[in-house]
Every structure is written in C-alpha cells, then in structure tokens.
Length: 121
Image (cartoon, rainbow, N blue to C red; front, side):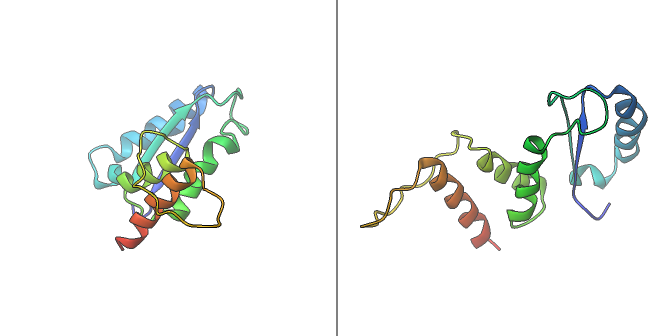
C-alpha cells in the first residue's frame, strides 16, 4: 500500500465491520501496509452505515493529514493529539510580545508543535 489510510468505521454497523473492515485488516496483517493504516472504530451517535462517522470525528484526522509534515503514523497521532487540544503536551515558554493579545495555551500548543514538525523537514 502506497498511501496512508485512516479507516473509520461506525461501531453500530456490524455488517460492514465483519464484511469489509475485518477482511481488509486481515488481508494486510503481516505486511508492511500495517504501518500505513490507522483503524478507528467507535460509536459517534448514529446507528447503521450511512453517515455513522460524523464530521466531528473525521475532520480532526483530515486536518492532521493536511497539516502534518509527513504521513508517518507517529507524526499523524502527534498532530491529531494537538489539534484535539490535548493538554498533556506542554508548550515551550512563549516569547512575550508587546501590544498583542495573548494567545490561549491551546493556540500556543498547536503552533509550537506544528512549527517544530514543519521545521524538521
């Protein structure tokens, strides 16, 4: 598999879990492709297949794919974590800037991680 794949499946859709997701994951088991797939199965409040993965679930992953400096799984997990506002990541001390509104801690965390990742290219 050449591409990185985030496979999101609604947990309340057993037909597609057992007839598509499980066979797909079995097919790539033991291959190098497992290093390019993030399988996510959860319940986002909608039963069945249609629209069961809601925008609030997939948009942070889409943003991580767009903003990450590479598509390696550890990088995607790290960027996704910051975009979700995870407070476990501590930002470095911000420089003081006069006459500007102070950014929130969440904004500083996001900016520091993204700049660190982008500067490593």
